[in-house]
Amino acid sequence: MRYVVRRLGFFLITLWAALTLNFFIPRFMPGSPLDALRVRTKDKLSPAALQEMLTSFGFKPNQNIFVQYWDYLGNMVTGKWGISIGGTLGQPVSEIVLHALPWTVGLVGVVTVIAFLIGSLVGVVAGWRRGGKLDSILPPIFVVTSALPYFWVGLILILVFSVWTNGFLPSDFNYDNSLQPSFTWPFIGSVLQHAILPGATILITSVGGWILTMRNNMITTLAEDYVRMGRAKGLSGWRVMTTYAGRNAFLPNLSGFAMSLGFVISGSILVEYVFNYPGLGYLLYNAVANTDYPVMQVLFMLFTVAVLVALILCDFAIAWLDPRARTKG
Image (cartoon, rainbow, N blue to C red; front, side):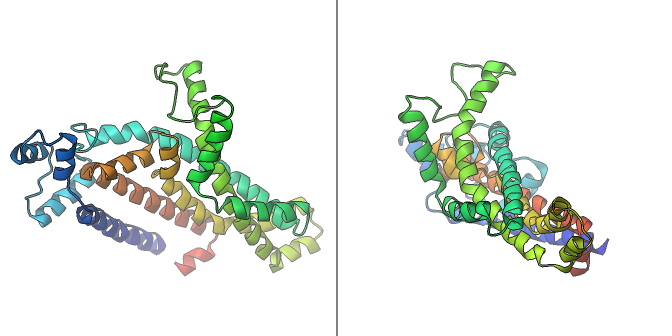
């Protein structure tokens, strides 16, 4: 119980610190919403009219900074996220976020889980057969792929599978514009087809890290006494690999996987930008470009909460699977 209370206390303190930074950092950025509005309206409105427009949207730049901060904390907790003052001028931030969230979770979330599962399984086998053909070929390859920039891999895939093949696979957006969103096979097929290239980009650049990490964990675990005991008892190689070695080598990877799941909410910003994919990452890019404080603050808040929740759930899972962790907490 004390372990849970300590973790929850750490969660709340970290969340408060992150929300505080989330409030002040956008206000230290160059420019202001007033300047952004002036550019978008091409100076057709007077400064007083622009100021009145911002105030009607709930943004009050002349208000005391501490009053703004207190109102901001209350709004973040109660879900009163305000109105966009950027490219989607006048639209509720909650609607904007809820429209983009499923696309990011569906693409980045699914691919992250697939990359983790493939990487962990391949890493276990490579570590178990250390020095074999699989172990000799895969690690050098994935050292290179894990270091490749997201945007570069995405551009190469677009060039090969879209440009050179006359549009064999779509290179942008999330579905065919001629279709209406619905639970029909043509629409679902279009969504899956448009997700192939961005999904492959994330998979290629992320699976290598899981393979290398799991391989190293496996090699370290194989030197433990309980693994030698399992072999000495005459257990099958499969059982020793999965139950004795693989299960314990898997635990250190849970923290990294939890962080990856947390960052799913932020999306792969560069991937979504390259493929013009309307997820949260692309939404964040547009919010920063348009100095849209309300959207930026909500997105940063969601990213922070997602990472913290994923980490605390990971802590509880590790404590449940490995009682030794509770004594260290």
